[in-house]
Image (cartoon, rainbow, N blue to C red):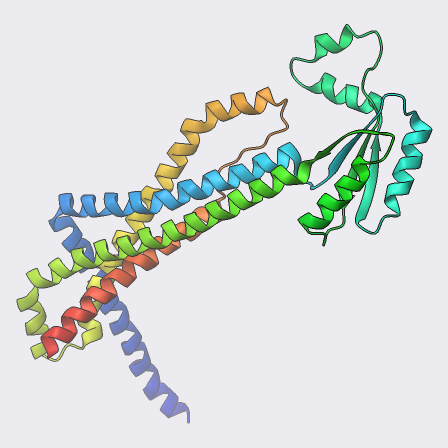
Length: 317
């Protein structure tokens, strides 16, 4: 038994070593082909990088738009402004009445002092508030609709609250939030569609580049097939070529997005300062950028595989 293992081990090691040498040769050959035409390779990488950077830029815009919606009012709450004559006891009694409704999840009472403190914290209101002799703000009830309530039920609840005698004004924050959610959903769908179209364009660009390389090396490929080279062996250098194209284009796309974030950093800081820090904007995470880089490599490999497979199938027939 030990003699059989000793005999099989060198064979196994030789196969692994041959596999490593073949892949090392394919890597060097693919890099040599890219270096033979630096201008054409650079143009291909630039076109593919721009195509991949556009979906990333749209995704960056959507992410920050969601941050904006969160800062300006992420909840679907309904703001109920009571009449100025309503005191604390009346506000608490009305809040207790609304809490027992089946379509209400919760009610928060906001006092005039809390409202005045929020206004004082906002930029530009501090001096004006200091000049006030008394607090003109009323009690406000923040009514949270039930989580599974649809817009018809919420609007019915808003109409019932608006008809109460102690209510002065009802502001339904969920309406603009619903519109913003619909806009974000539309933007997400457009981004996915744009990413699919530009991804297909990147595959075609890589495929056409590899196809031209295959045609220029047709005689070399014919000789390789005559001496017994398999289709996988012939295809392998071009797959590595597609991987290099995808990797370089992915790096270009990531760098373009980072440059875009740096260019927008100063205006974003000014906007955040104008809202007293309540807004939060951020760039794409490194995980997202890493996934984009991996997708770029996969697209490059796919384009090279399609082009090389079609070429080998045509030459074989």
